[in-house]
Image (cartoon, rainbow, N blue to C red):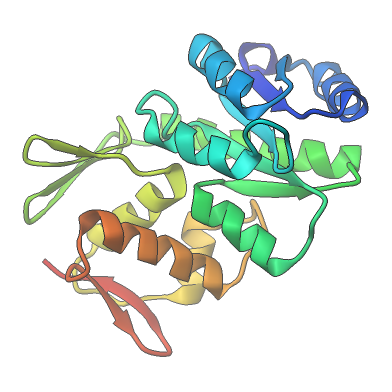
Length: 228
């Protein structure tokens, strides 16, 4: 996918931040659209269907966390790449972002090289996903369609953010096998972002809420496995 084919939605209430990021992304050839707050971002995202959304956390009217949660509830935006902009580097803030459904985060003040590196890494994963062989996995009453990034149980569609989907797909690909935490981090997150074991725990908890507690087992001190 060429850069001029990629649309990025930038959401921030600070004009200076908007200008810095827009300039650097446009210089790389990306198409950039903007919004000033969460409510506006929801409307713009539905209209333009961007490949990536860069979303500030602290905004008026609707903050970034709530905006991300609302986007993940929308089937048309549930798998859109989302990275947060945050001035807070504390661990709890990062975990809250992943819990809300974000794929990554970028800390302020903005460093253009880091910004572009993060953006390219995320979009590279998107290209790899599109180029991968389509495959449908079944596990009990679950059907997992990698091509459409869709999980169904009978007539019910279970909406999962991208990382939750990738994690579920990995576990279901080999039922009964214990995946160690380091392997999960490498295969689901790769080099996109430096995360810790707690990130996996957050995503596992969210998956259990959506598909049931009984399917994903914790192997204490080792990792996780899927049982049918």
